Amino acid sequence: MITSSKRKIREPRITLVGAGPGDPELITMKGANALKDADVILYDALVNEKVLDYASVDSIKVYVGKRSGEHSYSQKAINKLMVDYALNYGHVVRLKGGDPFVFGRGFEELDFAAGYSIPAEMIPGLSSSVAVPGLQQIPVTHRGLSESFWVVTGTTASGKISNDLYEAVRTKATVIVLMGFKKLKEIVKLYQQEGKNNLPVAVIQGGSTENEKLAVGIVDTIMEVVEEKGIGAPAILVFGEVVSLHPQFQPIKDFFAAIKEEL
Image 1 (cartoon, rainbow, N blue to C red):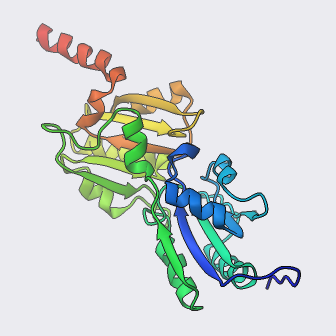
Image 2: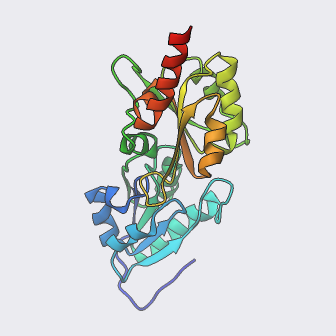
Image 3: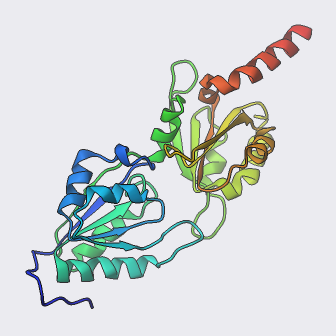
C-alpha cells in the first residue's frame, strides 16, 4: 500500500483514457484534460510518452509496460496499483494505447475499481484498427469494395490464432488484425487455403508515429515485402480489397492488368 501524509488527498477516482494510435495530437481533448487533472498516471508501453506533456508536472507518472509478450506488470498487479494510488493520492488516470475497450482489457479495470467502490469512467481513444489505415488513406469500408470490417486479435491468451480469424478470412469484409504480426505467416496460409492469393494486404508498423513503416502487397507476396521493408512489431495487418486504393498498390494493379491483356 502506498501512503502519503504530506499532502491533502482528493477523493479517489479512476479515469481510463485512450491515448490513440501513437501521434500525441490524436488524443481527445477530454483525454488531455483528464491527464492535466490527474494526480497519478499509469501508462502502457504502446503510449507515446509525449502524450504525458499534457499532464501536470507535479503528477506521478508510472510506466507499467503491457506490450504483447513483454508484460512488465501482470494485469493483477496493475489493477492493484491503480486502486492503491487512487486511495492514497486521489485521481488516477489509467492511460492506454488506442482505445481501452478494443483489446485493451479496459472493462476489467473498471470492474476492479467498482469492487472497491471507487468512481471510475472511461474516455474513448482512437483505435489503431481504424485510425492507422485511415491515416494511410486506406478506408476500412468503401462502396463497391467492402461493406463491413472485422477487427480481430491475432493471438489469443493461449498463444493460438483466434478462431474468429478462420471465419473472417471466408468473408468479403476488410479484416484488421491487431497483435498479429508474429502470426502473419499463419494468417497468410489461411487466406491461401481460401484461394485468396491475390487479395491486397497492408502491414503498418508504428502507425501515426514518426517511425511508421508500410508494406503493401498481396497475400502471396506480403511476407517478402515485409522482410524487404524491415517491418516488425508492433504492427497492424489489413486484409481486403480496400488496400488496393493505396497509391503503392498501383504498380501491382498495372502488373495484373498487363497479364490479363496477354491472356
